[in-house]
Image (cartoon, rainbow over all chains, first blue to last red; front, side):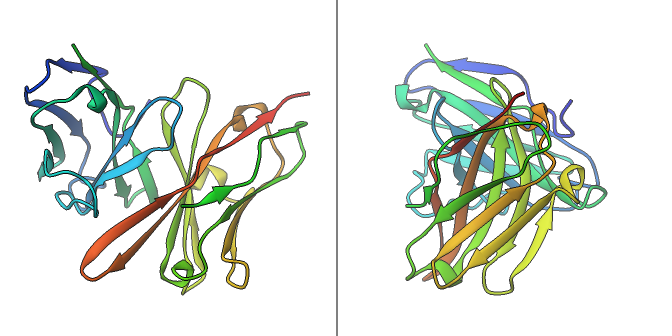
Length: 110
Length: 118
C-alpha cells in the first residue's frame, strides 16, 4: 500500500482536460515538493513536473500541476492519444527520510 | 541519454551491480535517481546521489543492502544490491537531473531487468 494515494484510473477523449489527484500527509506533500512522472508501459518513467508546479525542459505546457495542503493534482489539457500512460506522483517523506511514490493512475484516451 | 547495463539473472543471496553511463560533459552536474519496478507493479524509489557531493541517500527498506557510487572518470553511476531476494526482481531505472540556463533537464536510462530466482 502506497503512502501517497492516487485513483487507479482516469479516462478522457481527445481534446478534453483530465486531472489526476494525489493525496498524502503532513510528512510528505504537506511539507515537501511534489513530482509527477509519466510512464508509457515498457519504457522508463519521464519526469513531467518538479517542485510541485515546474516543468522540465521539453515538457509541453499542456501538462500543469498544483499543490494544496496535503494533496496535489496534475492536469492535462488538449488530451492526445500519446498521453495514454501511467502517471505517478512522488514526494520526499520526512518520516521515512526517502522519496515515496503513489500507486499510479492509468490514463486511458478513449 | 543514459545507457544501462544488460539484464541479469541472479540466485538468492547473490549480489548484482547495475551501471548507468552518461555523457562526460554533463556528468558532474548530475543528481542521479535509481528507481525500480517489479513486474506489473508501480515505481519504488531506491536511492539518490549527487555526483559533485558524492553523498548517497537510500530507501530505508534497502539500507544495508544497497550502495550507489559514481566513477567520474568513466561518467558512470553504479547501483549495487546485495543479499538478493526474489522480491528484488524488478526493472531498475536510472535517471539524471541537472540544471542549465535556469531550466531543469532530465536524462533517462532504458532500464535493466534483474531477475532473482533459484
